Image 1: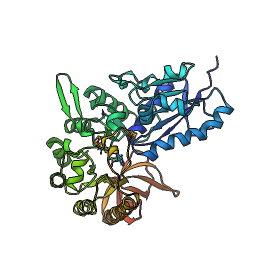
Image 2: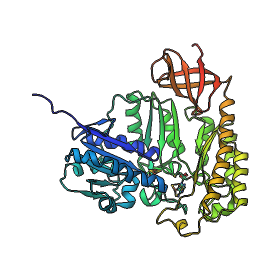
Image 3: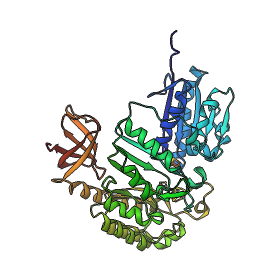
Image 4: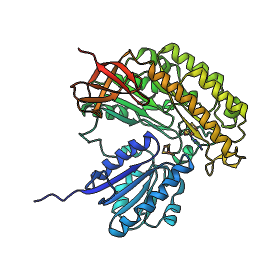
Length: 438
Ligand code: SAH
Ligand code: SF4
Ligand code: F3S
């Protein structure tokens, strides 16, 4: 008997790491229906766009991509096209009305039902919030995975920042049970994974059930660190208000927890933080950074910033610049405020676009300067690099340092090895190093 040829599934992923993780799980779910992943839309039997709704530009990309896919559907009427992710959740039926080539719309909490949707003949929309989709998904196969993997442990957000769609697209905060997370991490370790990044929209709000007990993220990090083969742990994204004492302490006393933390603050102005409904001040954020650095003096910090939030004055923006100067970020992301339908801030008067543009440029220049300084400070230092892939040049390897710098160096080592490397040169986006023997 000959085997059925595999059908081809192309997934294009937009947005955050949680979408990257979800795309992997969607591909695995469709594996059971005879699909395997492919790198091109051309020739695919099914195309999924795993979308992001965070800013207007991100959401609009979906419709331009669907426009580009239209000829493929004309060529192959059996081609199935699905929209998944946060735009699917936010817009639901509207997507089918705006773009009739779409066969399936599936929100981030219902994609475990993709196989049944794909098997159905008619256009379908699924955007309900299921109790635990992960429990319905197949165990994780993928023997070809690299040594660093994502693992979603928490989803959703109860914070309702005034600008943000995530609480609406991803729903309330839910934590996966401890046993499931440990089981998945052990499976990844058996497949050769050495580094796990725990994911959640508010990952440090993690409170997972463990029998009658509830465990925090700090507890979980220490527990996962004990798994044979797991040598590095990271987590993202965290909220300043959920940074509990045991997690801060873990940065000091759990060697597997890497010295890098993405801790968004959005603004340095208390007036703006209040208007954003962030429920913390610039001072409390700086005090928190102080405590984290006391636990781990070489902690590299990253953050997110929004400029041009409604009502932001020059003085408010100056407060953001002062906060950045005080923290000294190793890396950061900054965005111009984008009004999102359904969020409270969308009702407010906007800042003039040219003013917001100018502020974004000023802030990005300062952040780029700090990033360059952080990279340059690595020169001459020794670090440990997890070998993830071949580098750009022959004989070169590439991977991440403990502080999440991209590093390339020459050596003959297998993927998954953690190499001692001395940094000899800092480029704008990566570091060059030399392997240290032994
Ligand atoms: N849960 C995370 C990340 C949320 S989305 C957190 O709370 O930090 C990632 C980033 O996108 C946010 O930190 C914010 O800086 C930015 N963002 C969210 N909504 C936005 C909007 N309406 N306009 C511009 N940037 C936005
Ligand atoms: Fe959005 Fe705020 Fe929740 Fe982050 S904490 S996901 S910015 S509402
Ligand atoms: Fe975007 Fe949804 Fe992630 S809106 S940033 S894909 S949670």
